[in-house]
Amino acid sequence: MRFDVVTLFPAMFDAIAGHGVTGRALQQGLWELHRWNPRDFASRAGGRLDDRPFGGGPGMVMEAAPLKACVEAIEAKSGRRQHRVLLSPGGKPARHADVLQLGQLSAVTLVAGRYEGIDQRFTDTLIDAELCVADLVVSGGELPAMLLIDAVVRWIPGVLNAEESAPQDSFATGLLDHAHYTRPEVWQGQRVPEVLLGGDHQAIARWRRTNALLTTAKMRPDLLEASRREGLLSKEDERLLATGG
Figure 1 (cartoon, rainbow, N blue to C red):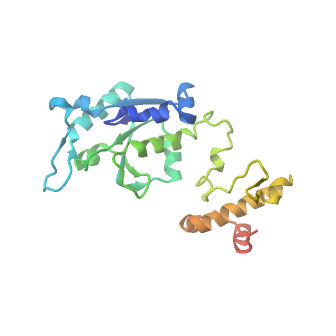
Figure 2 (figure 1 turned 90 degrees about the vertical axis):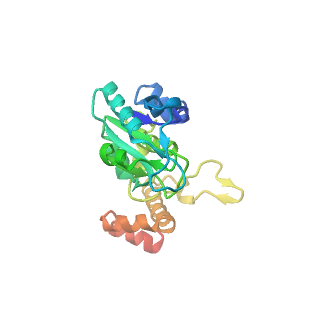
Figure 3 (figure 1 turned 180 degrees about the vertical axis):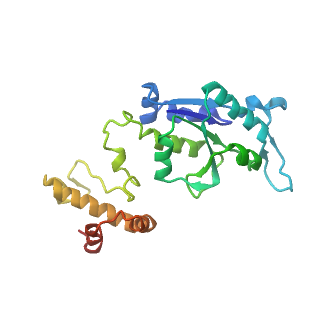
């Protein structure tokens, strides 16, 4: 899978290109990362591509023309029309389903905005999807773009050492993940739940499902209600929620 990122700070993407799961997978050729600085396509001196907003107000706005030229250069280089995503606090909240949909594509262009915003005409005419990764405003779209890339790359076959890891992650089943424990069995007076030590795989699976249900009910009741509406909870799930296992 190929990712092209449009960013004023290409070096920021060293974080996913050279470290961790994504960095290892990049070295193995399981995905591609190409960085593009829209300043290279600006017509004004010094690569300037921002200007004051019409109507007044604080901040500066990124111009449409350099961004358009950058996107066109990306697709001329790749030889194909790519799915174009703008990372923006005004976008649709990104969900697990969006990650899976992006993972089905062969090439995605991610546009990381900066300043007060991007000329809306660029978004209206060249962007296929506008996504937001959290109800937060950060300094630019680079960190959200990296979060999205990381989430998608995890689903590429061969990226994770254990192929079953991604399908068991939070959100993959409509619920948060269950709690995890490792050695020692007792830490600061706290014991690992006894059921996890007994070797009864059915009992362990039931405990993990119950824990995931209760954790989701406590931390993200909205996810639990969505799972109910979508028919993802069984009668047994409802019983486990009601009885605590």
